[in-house]
Length: 139
Image 1 (cartoon, rainbow, N blue to C red):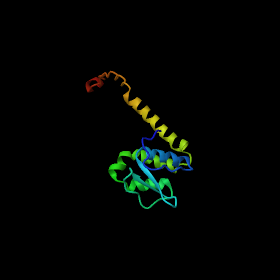
Image 2 (image 1 turned 135 degrees about the horizontal axis):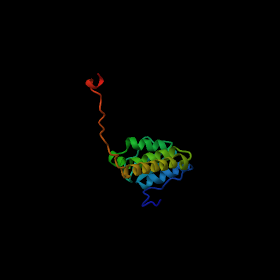
Image 3 (image 1 turned 90 degrees about the horizontal axis):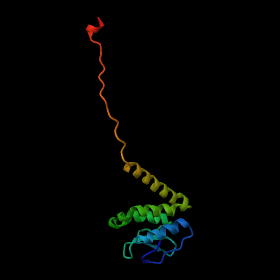
């Protein structure tokens, strides 16, 4: 993934999930600020308001950003933000998150194939008249 711009220095994370989430956050213009004690705050763009209070975990900071962030900025990137939160909470994002995303994409593709395939021609319906005996026939 190539970033167009990095408005603030990107923190280096020990956990792969946190680092993947940080890269995705930066790519959609969400800036990560690190406080002196190592807690995280997020803001939308270089001049957005920081989430308060600072959170010790990146996933908690992402959740706070979703709750506190300006709606017009956050709603545009809601799927990406949910993926960021999932990445940051996962010890093994390659398995836990990315495989689940891949499965969802493949399932959606199969459903679209089923929906878009030509409909089978309807079988012709025939009306059969079954004669029932009348009272005069039974006597």
